[in-house]
Image (cartoon, rainbow, N blue to C red; front, side, top):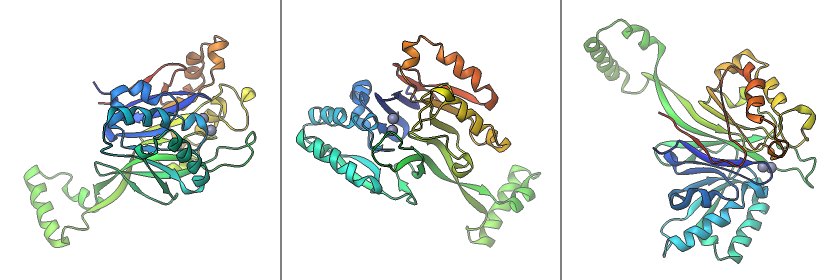
Length: 299
Ligand SMILES: [Zn+2]
Ligand SMILES: [Zn+2]
């Protein structure tokens, strides 16, 4: 069975998540091609949240695999990045060129208000996140992404009218209404978000993101006391996400990733601590374990 999400994440070392359903990868940290093996050739899109090396160095492995696995490059992987990161993108492109791997990729800049089409009538909506830069020389533009689909919902006035009708009467009503309205205004359209990935970020503003089926958020540290300014700790995350009663309806699963390796060194039972501390959120919590490949299956 193919997983819905496969990935790895450990703060500083590398973060990448691949979605086989959409041939899409969020970030491309070291080890992505190594872990995906032959499936690396299925990757069509890579969305880079920001250009820290733990989110980009996997491009070399992907390029290296593709250059050997395919005699002639049939298709380039589209690598999307925010146009504010052009300078950093240029550095990566230049480095890939040194290894003769740049032709495996097509680098495409996007703007925050863009809707980026991918296969299967899905699209990506990028949004800005706050990856504070206390320890970095300059502030950076960092992104999150939602995998979206446009859906239709019968307008309330029509839904009310057909509520108690038989299937045959429903069909007749719909047919007649379609003729009257010229096929157009029976439905409202809305954006359905399958997954929202937040890259490296302080706790995101859930109201801004809106409803999403799966929310993926970094959680480098377990406690606020351990946290540095550039990352997120579980306590602050839980505090922010539980501060608004609305939030409980905004996502049905929360995947936490980007954990610090120190919890392995300190032999902390970090999974139990996470589950205990996040009970308040009253949602399904998934943990991307340190040094393990994460797989999530979806019916
Ligand atoms: Zn970062
Ligand atoms: Zn990172």
